Amino acid sequence: MIGRLNHVAIAVRDAAAAARIYSGAFGAEVSGALPLPEHGVTTVFVTLPNTKIEFIEPLGEASPIARFLERNADGGIHHVCYEVDDIIAARETLKAAGARVIGSGEPRIGAHGKPVLFFHPKDFSGALVEIEQV
Ligand code: CO
Image (cartoon, rainbow, N blue to C red; front, side):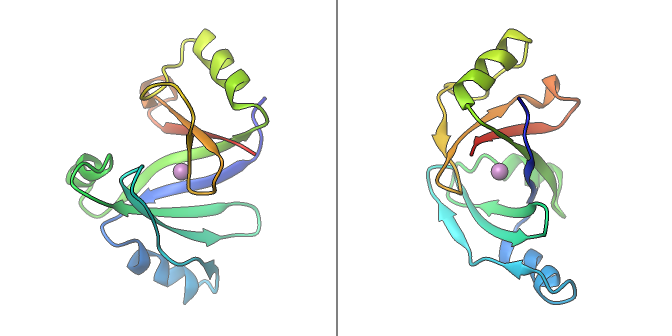
C-alpha cells in the first residue's frame, strides 16, 4: 500500500530563509512561497532527485505549527509524507490497524492540489505521518 516518500516537512519561522542554503550551497531547485490559509501554513518546496523537502512556516493566528515552534524554537522535522494510490482505502486499513486520523478524517487538498490526511505521531513512533493520494 505505501508508496514513495513524497516529502519531509521541516517547520521553521521563515520558510524562504530556511530554503536559501538549499538553493545556494546545495544548488537545489526551490519553489516560491505558497500560502495555504486552509492549512494555516505557508510552504516552500525544495525539489531533490528522489523526494522533496517542504519548509512550512505559520500563517495566521491559529496555525497548527505554532505550538510546535514554541517547543522547537530553531525549527525541526515536523512530518513525513508517503504516497498512496487510494487515500480512502489507506485510511481504512490504517484505522483498522489502530492508527488515529487527525481532524475530521476526511481528506483535504494539500500543497500539491491532491488529497491528504494526517495520522497521530503516537501511532507512528513519534513521527507525524501524512499520506497523499497521487
Ligand atoms: Co506535508
